[in-house]
Structure formats: C-alpha cells, structure tokens
Image (cartoon, rainbow, N blue to C red; front, side):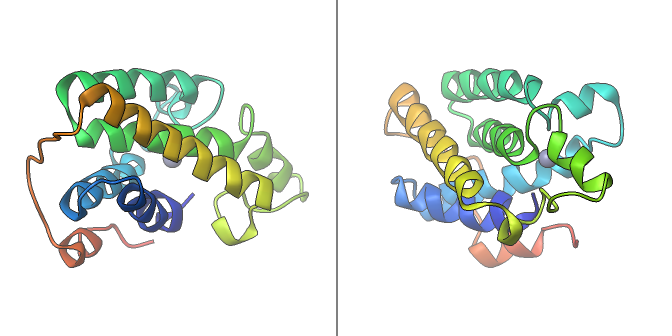
Length: 157
Ligand SMILES: [Zn+2]
C-alpha cells in the first residue's frame, strides 16, 4: 500500500482516535517511511515485515515496544506491518495472483475491495486504541512538525 493508507488515512484515523496533530504526523510519517527503512526487496527478513502471517508478529512486537517506551515511531511501524498483512493477503497471495494476471494490485487503496479496506481501517484503529490504553493518555512527542513538513519529507512514488 502506498501513502494513501500509510500516511494520509493513518493520520486521519489517529486524529479521530484522539491523538494530537503532531502525534498523528509522527505516527503517519513513521508508517509511510517503513517501506524505505525496510524495503521488502532487500532481504528475506524484510519480506516477513510486509506479508502475513509474519507481519502480524512484527506488528505485535512493535506495538508492545511502542507502548512500553511511549514511542510513536514504533507505533507507526506496528500499523504498517498490520496494514500490509491485510492488504497483501496470506503469504502475499494477492501479489502472486496479480503476477498471474488475476485480481487487482493489492497496493492500490482505490482498487482494494471494500472488505479489505474495512479490515485495514479496523486493524489500524484497534492498534491505536491499544496503544493509548497501554501507554496512557500522555504521549511524548520527540519531534514536532507541521503536516506540510511531514508530507514534504515523503519519498516520491
Ligand atoms: Zn510495506
């Protein structure tokens, strides 16, 4: 999935779940930058970070660490891994189907089936709430930025 989910929608959902604007920016920036930091093409280990079933385990691990350290960057990574796990299907079967000439590109939000979109939103909101429950209301923001800054630091796709 591209920045539509990993940045824009994630930022909106974080705001709706009660995170402040700088917090939502930080979460969304971390989410969208995960593909740059851990490109799936770089290694087998990285592939596990973007495809189920392993991506769920990465997501859980990041979420636990995020709550423990009140680290919104790790929360963004937890969201990315879970969003990919839903979007790509089990063991990336949606990618394989696409390569075989079937189905739709699993990385394009507009083409995703409504049920897939709903599950991505649900899994994202659930994790945002779990973070807040575990880390408490007070989150520490290590840096702040305007939405403009966050968006302009996006890699260009
Ligand atoms: Zn990814």
